[in-house]
Amino acid sequence: MPELSQESERGRPAAPFGVAEVTGPSMVPTLYHGDRLLVHYGARIKAGDVVVLRHPFQQDLLVVKRAAQRREQGWWVLGDNAYAGGDSTDYGVVPDDLVLGRVRFRYRPLRPGRRSPWALLGWALSAARPVFSGRAASRRLRAR
Image (cartoon, rainbow, N blue to C red):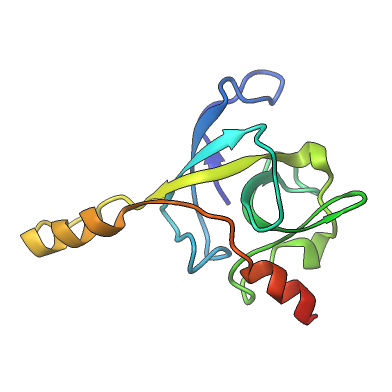
């Protein structure tokens, strides 16, 4: 569940790109608590994309999920961690106007106390990655 850093008064993003921070385990192993995300607002969404959306019942709460399937009323979204919950299996289809944007990139900040050369090298090689469309959630959907 990310918090967005840039929004205008009307709830629309002030710029086409913004930064969000992940809280919670619902997207593990793709995203972890504390990861930073580069969000492309208004981007075209396709099945498998990781998206930022407003929670259907609590619209001041922003969540990050995988768009699993396009439905007539909107998107069926799922977390990559099937045991965490908090996705369309709980609240149903998410209307299109609640889907804010697509996650393009993530980076993991350096953990405190990790200052050895090997720790820094490991972090540098794995910290920043693009977030690609995946089919893990789509497979979960078909299995139900």
